[in-house]
Length: 397
Image (cartoon, rainbow, N blue to C red; front, side):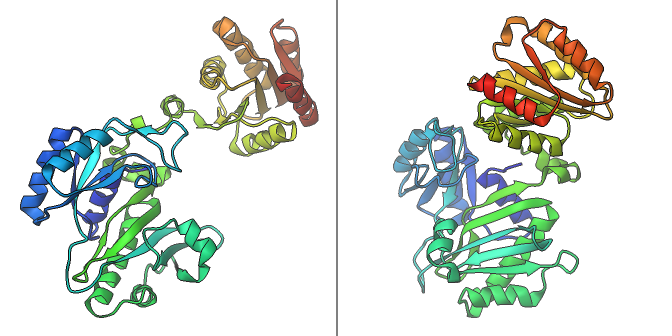
């Protein structure tokens, strides 16, 4: 589950992470009021207007701008609100901006020049340990930094059982070339950031940039936070921050009815029970010359109602040219699934305009095949994986 920047910053602040302060606004009038409030509380005279969408690269798309006075701020906020912001991480059509964050200007003059760093916290699956990735090249695409100057990217692995040790926080500050008060502030920042990562059951924190201000304060200027949905039952207050308008509406609908669905860009819809079989089915589709249009695990209770709901979800995608149903009858009997497919097909009527290939293996698979073959519907049954692949190939061609 992704959070907006302002939500991520509020969460980080609750764990003691220093942040660039800001107030979210949904209209240009609210933006001006937020700027006035920030001026009173922080003393800032310039403000940054930031589009709030679940995507990075907002600045490159024109979604982050500096306002030097209230009139300029109102004009900028009015232009950003409602725009279709296109970035490297959005769909081709972009995402509509429904709210902006009015943030304080933290690049104020002082005794020394400000510096930008990159920092993220995530799980290293290869070692089973958490990892803090950091670089002196903040404010840039970390992928470009890794390709051009890999020696400027550092990793610090943290044993989850031990937690972040003080010497590791000091090592990070040292590798970033800090000294004096900035060194102390960075060690505090890193410790608080890791505490927030663990305490929120997050799967990713990405702070780009982490800023050393001209008076040696260390603050998070941006915040990309992804929470592990498996841990949300422990964080009801964080689950309430979910913005459904930022998520794929078909995936939202699937989650509400208890289906595990992920929308993809292909032309063959998948309906499978079990995540492992679903992955194998997607490989099967690729080998047949097609592309999976979705990942859909209907689970172990593939009755008529559940199958019909799955059909409706898949058919919302206009790119689907065929549907492959691949069910292993272990917990659920194959003949029950077959009857569910036939009933769902009849209920949907003319809504189904694409061929359907059904492969049922397991308990009562022979009875299931007879039901499918004798239904008189545009449903093709298959027994072997290769047979299913051949029929998928015929359907999409």
